[in-house]
Length: 199
Image 1: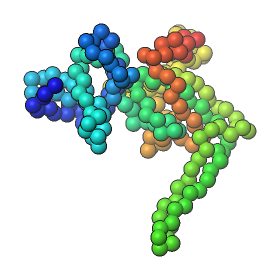
Image 2 (image 1 turned 90 degrees about the vertical axis):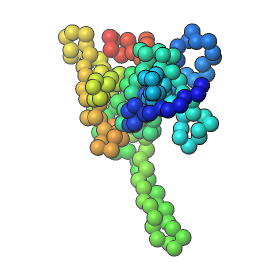
Image 3 (image 1 turned 45 degrees about the vertical axis):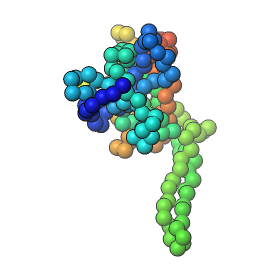
């Protein structure tokens, strides 16, 4: 496919989507992750791959994507530095107690300390008291991310929605005494999504 001139539509937004299955070619990728580009006549493409490796980059026509699976990358990350997308199913556990910490100090050739880093254990301590433990779905509404989960105190459908940022520090990593992990997404795991919201 030869394209003359492409321009990036939203430079800071990364999208994820699945390809349609009735295409005339085999789709190897489970998820296509990239930025949205448009050509001079208005056709849109998702560019997948990293800029460091141009041989691995590929343009996918937006018309070949399953529109219902399109999700936007959030700025938040799990305890294991995994990305969190709109439509992901995540578990959030908060607890009282302290995690084990180790301090890593690196020294330069001249013997001076170059970097000091605290590494925290990414598991819940055995003696910790769990204060919040829910699984829910990440939803993007007008650029804001929310956590939707089952709430037995709700009278209607039983779902509660809270801003996702309340579980994260200003640098978008989980707060201390919080363990956050991705356990699926609503497209690959629809039964899990239904179970979470309509228990």
